[in-house]
Amino acid sequence: MGGIVVILIKSLIIGAIVGFGVGAGAARMFHAPKSQSMGAFRTIGEMNACAGDRASHFSFGLGFFFNAWASAVGAGALTQDVDHRIIPNWSVAVLLRKGKTIEETMHNPFKMSIAGAIVGAIVVAFLSTTTASIPEGLRNVALEVLAPAADWLINMAMPVIFWLAALDAGKRSGFWGTIFGGLAHIIMGNAVPGVVLGILVGKGVDDSGWNNITKILMTAIIVLFILSAFFRGIDIELIESLNLTVPNWLQGLHNLINP
Amino acid sequence: MTDGQLSDAMYKKSFWFADWSFPIFVALLSSGIFAGTHMYYVYKVGAFNEVAIVALLEAGMQGSGYGAAAAFGASFLFARILEGGLVGVLDIGGSILTGVGIGIPALLLGAGIVLPLENFFVSLITGLLIGVVIGYVVIGIKKFTVGKANSTFGSDVMMGAGNSSGRFLGPLIIISAATASIPVGLGSLLGGAFFYLWNKPVAGGAILGAMAIGAFFPI
Image: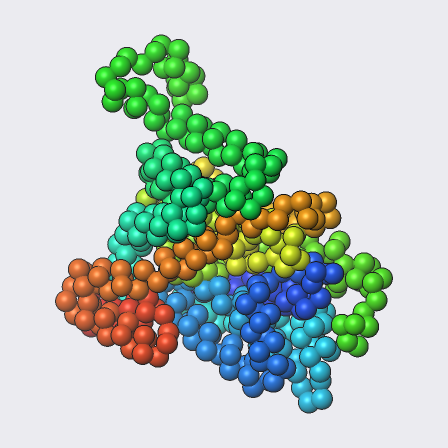
């Protein structure tokens, strides 16, 4: 019982500050780019689509609320929709009362942040406490099913999906994605980081050429790979796999860092 | 009061609209999101992200390494910060929810730093500081590099790949449930099938179905 109270209090705090930020950020989106905002383009589109109709905003949020609940109960993940859809739309629904225009409500960062804080606190507290009160046996079933699935996703499915996306995104991202992806699997044990960095470099150069930003990026990636390889002892492994003797200075350097 | 009537002075001075207050809003959001990941780390509920992305962090916590989660989150953070300053809308999904909520915790845990995730107050403060930095960097980019870097660094490609990885999780969960036991497998596939009919994510239905049957026939 004590555990639930702690979760409730923490969730209320977290929900309130998240909701405050999301509400203000969403309202500022209607004033971008003059006012720097935060949110998502799909959120603007969806909020405009509901067009200040209270019932539409509420039911749009409600659909995603049930999704979020299912995902929280199953895997403890509240989903991004809490921030993208539920808090913004329910805040507007709370603010829109008779005769209020969207300029006075949805576009007003002050009102949206207060409404967002209230909605956020309630939503997050509800999702967390209901999930935490599920018996442990049931949650173990969920975890036992989810853990192998997540493992396959990360080690097989995701590297392939990202790799194919890199190959489809153009010659440069495909080339660098393949080089860094393969190296990342050797050095870090998972190809996804490398493929993602390959896309970053490839598309960066596609869009703006070899300028300072892309050059710094490339250098940072190479340094990252060299350091990870060194700290994980991949250089020694490589030399030994080639049936060569490890030079004393290299062994000495490793001993120096990791005695 | 309509958009058109807001004066330029208001956009420069008002707390609710000006650039100088932006880092405060990002800091609060980021603080809450990072603390949400603390909740997940300690209580297994509360991470503000999709099942598939939280699963990246979970895999790290189970001992499969934090590399995937760290790189996925950190590169999103990088790309979205650049984009945020350029277009005036910081995408919170990529930057805060995935970058600060998954990527940075994975980096910290990978380096063996657990305090920010174990302690609620430290997690709030860590998130707050990260958010302030992100907010100032975005404003800095908005002010100084306008028009110089017109690239989103393939974040659309990564977003597309990230979304299709999410879709893979549904079938993978049903396969995993079917491997665990026959009743749980049947529950999982029914849950997934009905969620599909109701236009809800298959992964959610598959887990709930497995749990419902698992209540009567434990694995």
